[in-house]
Amino acid sequence: MRKLTFLLVALFTTSFINAQKGVVLSLDFTPGASLAINDEDFDRGRDLDATASFSYDFGFKVGYGFNDKLSLVTGIGFHSHKAGFVHERDVVTVLGAKVTDKNHNKKFSRTLGYVRIPLMLQIGGSGADEGGGFFFRFGPTFNFLTSARYKDDRFVGYSVYDATIAENPLGIDVNKQTDLWSSSNGGVSSSKTGGQGAIYESFVLGMNLDIGGQIRLADNFKMIITLHLETTLTNPEATGAASYANNIRGDVYSSTNVSDLSKTVTDLTPFAATFPNYKDEDLSGITQRAQTFNVFGGLTFGFCYTIPVD
Image 1 (spheres, rainbow, N blue to C red):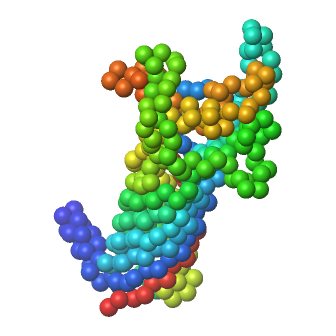
Image 2 (cartoon, one colour):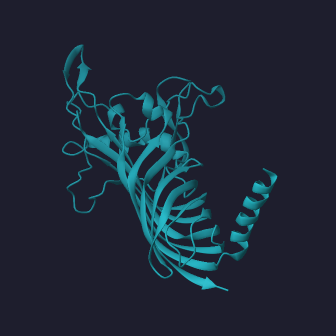
Image 3 (cartoon, rainbow, N blue to C red):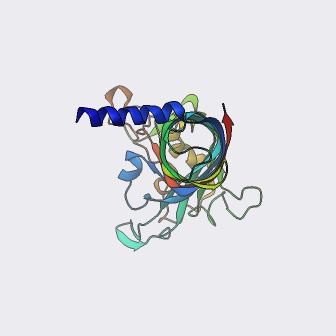
């Protein structure tokens, strides 16, 4: 048994020592599905029902292979993350009577764009002139916000926002500063604090995991297919996210036909929030949201070219 163990260790070590070093250049694209996970959103119920949405990554990567089995990978890319929701509620009570909810089956979403720099450790794979090889890689990503848009089909036709307007086809820009709100004496009324805060953080730390394989197409040239999973580690939302639910009264709701009693301010908020915040006595006067986790998964398709290094 000892001899067998020694032989296996020797073979494994020899494969690392004799393996070919190299610089790997790759280009890849990852279509997949995304969600934004937040306690307040889930607590809202059927008028804020989360649904998986199409999102994607694409980017250019550079890896340095210490040998065939161990590499360090970085690069630059773009990530688009969409948090989609559906207004599933079909009946609403108005003045004691149940009526059809006119927002039933309406869709709305929050779409974020990031420039991304990954830093991942890759274990496994195969040499530049060898056939296929299984590998996995993992590590943090450094994400820098470039855009944030909110689109809501419930606004069309009765609000200042209209998706058909050419100047604003993608929705409401929420990549900005917004007024912060507080409650009055622990009650449900509210007032501005006088300060402002960003709705989304300009920087988000994430974590990636890729599990897949390589297919040799020619000398030093391979196709890569992996299962890609990722999540944010820090909160992508900033202090203004919770308060934006109140700001929408003035930003969007101001021209709404108030005679339409089946539409309420609560329905029109892009972010659910605890207001006032009864969860934290020290912050009871501030609108509050729990941390949001942006999650994404998909299949990565790419090509890589290895430049051998002696």
